[in-house]
Image 1 (cartoon, rainbow, N blue to C red):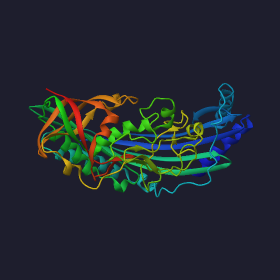
Image 2 (image 1 turned 30 degrees about the vertical axis):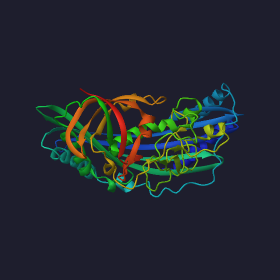
Image 3 (image 1 turned 135 degrees about the vertical axis):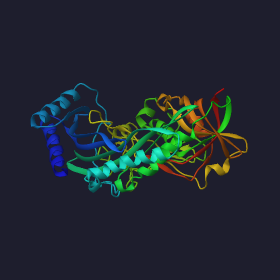
Image 4 (image 1 turned 180 degrees about the horizontal axis):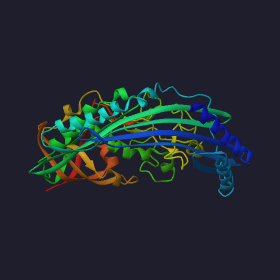
Length: 445
């Protein structure tokens, strides 16, 4: 498959040059993905999707053009490159419009485990069944396990630019489950998942257990008293906050004034306890790639160094606007879009001790779930989110709470971090430890 895609990528680029482009970059991608869901220890549904798609970017002078297609054939390639060339004649020119001339790929270890992709079907079904069984057994109040699933994806990417063709293969495997607990006080849900490159690293029993314990543990909770409290934020919730924060480090958003970090480079933006890195060459990382969708090797570096903004995500184009090089963070949301700045493996660096060791003696809220993270204002950072978790007194867990509303500002929240735990946990390509935050505003009863 790699050889076939490399040939197609080069053919697309050559067709673009023959159609009047002064330079061109072609990307071809093959994706083969499957999902299995079970119910009552039997397969309930499965689906598989296979697709080859291609896209081309051209330069006519310094004017950029773009087009894409699925299921490419000779006629479609010709039409696509002509659309890109004609489109380029209609847009403004810019010196930042150029393509990669990189000479080497990055070493990311093994991100391709095709043997796992070709494993027997019953082994994959067993993983989904293990999720269901462990979630049901996690707590006596669990009544329903919703969509325990096993998902896999095999992908091949080939890019032709600068007279060379590069390609790589990668795999992703994941499991996920939602558990529902019920008693006389009502119902509560818990969710957990895991994503990895190697299926041997999947732990469906542990994932199901965590989902079940989360649902069962939060039963019986009532809204807490309205007020301001220190907050203990577990790793999974911190990852969710970090995922929201990631777009603020996009150079495109910063340059257009659509980020709360515009004009903040070199300034103290967060607590000195906070350091955030982007590690595109992390061996075996879920977000690791030998090169991005512009054929640039990712650069592993700090975005935040002891609270000071030290970097952002650059593509070739955003870097060109500032006279800088790409950081290897150019990725396509889909083949129908051009590369834009995004994270590889985004990591909030862990501390040296558990955050619990820094707990104050009074009341602390342990936030186990934040609902509505998609509503956070990506520019101002303001949020108002549903919350559930536990009330701690003197460092001891006393009772659950739910139906609370946590309000504040995302940038200020990371500025009020008092302690960073040593329990780094990966959820997909984002990793974070537990955080202790000085104060959050809670609306309850």
